[in-house]
Image 1 (cartoon, rainbow, N blue to C red):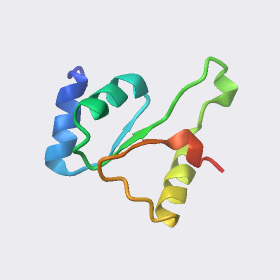
Image 2: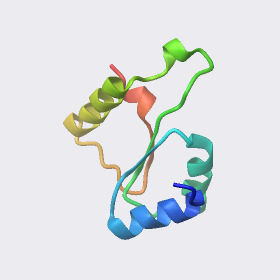
Image 3: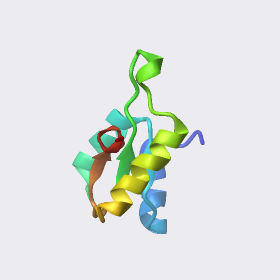
Image 4: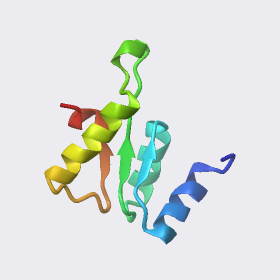
Length: 84
């Protein structure tokens, strides 16, 4: 989108949307600065491409969060940990 990360996060705040990102470190820093948001779902990537989450695994991990009724508001969630 060619927008600074802070602008993207502010837009999700205004729209009350959860943010899904692979830009984990930058958004974790923004979360540490201001944790008031609808939630950030972070997908970490590995240098070994075989270990990275596929789109299907990302969807499954989000379903696992929903099934667990996990509250996302104001949280930075590592989605990789919900892959099972």
